[in-house]
Length: 240
Image 1 (cartoon, rainbow, N blue to C red):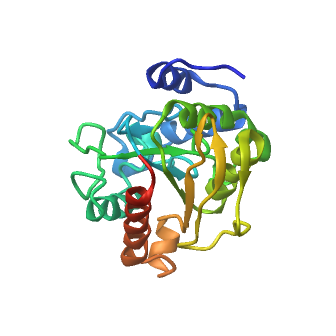
Image 2: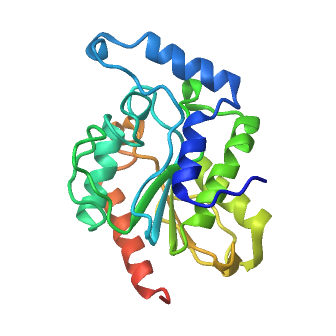
């Protein structure tokens, strides 16, 4: 597996990636067939790197960029309702300097938090294949290696939850847990053992802040805020 020396070189490699033909076709098709409300905008239409505080103790792991959100704006969780829902919760927990995520130059800063995703391109119907997830996994592994201070991972959705556990199983050193991790909103799991030379970060599960979840009431703003308040408390209890 390729190793990157810095987040800068990793992110440059991510933005050049064309390993998944189906995802390349889809992200470029979306950009060429943009809806009327975005007809005057130039889409990013490339894979998205993570972003945030490089000294972060919180890693937020989503599914993939939104076709007309991150794929348009060039930053994860930016330019759509899911991004604003997430940023409001991060702002309330002290992890962001503002409650909106609108565009790359909007002045948003993450504090002690870094946002990334399981898949770096928008998959058709938000359903990546197993092979596409396998090809993207080295990027997440590299982030977990390079972000030296991460104490807690918040997984937004079941796919992100399982992606982190898969890395723990494959690369953890002596990792074990008292209770078998099962995806449920707000569930929190701590681990004994190491991941890439540091104590394995704890895991908190959350429903994804997609419009489908927020409009149906499956995920309320208060429910999401509580996840990040819990993450803050867990970070503060973790050894430095």
